[in-house]
Image 1: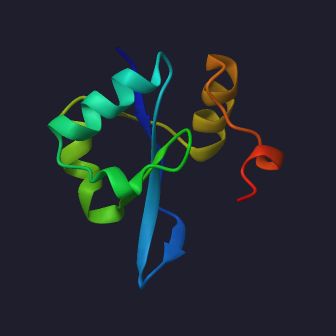
Image 2 (image 1 turned 90 degrees about the vertical axis):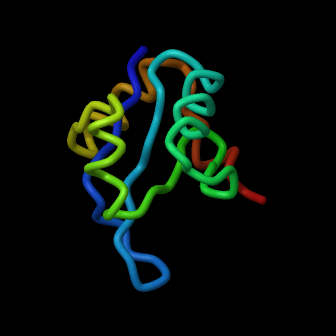
Length: 89
């Protein structure tokens, strides 16, 4: 199991946000999120958006902290990345 979290640098709604991903499967990611009270509404096609204050709790639960570029590189390598062109809603 490899769940990764990056630095909370993304501003929205008066807070900073990080990304939570899995290198293995979306099922693994959803299970980790459920076990750690990350709400389903935080899921965005291939990652969860999580607030900065959740970072210590998620790392304590087993998420591996990496930089944003590393997280993106590993998500792409996993085959789970949803490209920007496919994110249009």
